[in-house]
Image 1: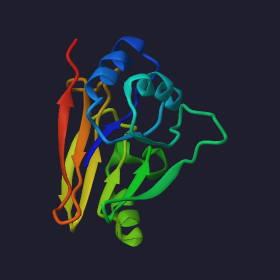
Image 2: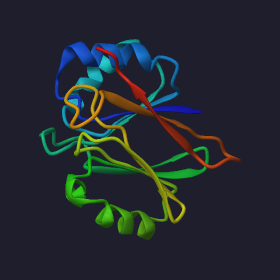
Image 3: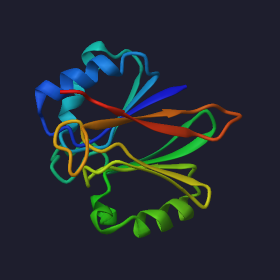
Image 4: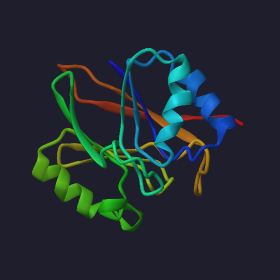
Length: 159
């Protein structure tokens, strides 16, 4: 199963439209917050299941700050990352992921992509397709299969 992971789109339509064109083959779309309302544009060409959490720049009361979901038997934590202070490191997120016994922890907030496996947990930050810091404009994809470890890769959104 192919999962598209997007974060920190911040309402920049030029890049949101580029992302919408890239994610059409994914089975699931996950938005990690900071302009969660951009999901409306992302869903125009997307027909799969959609999950989203709000970030520190989102104020919709009906959107959760965090979700735990199951995909193909893999437990996945979805969070923006601000409540774990991920700009200073992933220690708090790491311990929360271990406590929750997740296979994957997805987070954004820093606008800096990261793929790291630590003690059986895959940590993935897709970066930002709109306002990157120190790097290219990116999103992430997860490949999730019941009988294999989850794998992740970054996809660069070209200008």
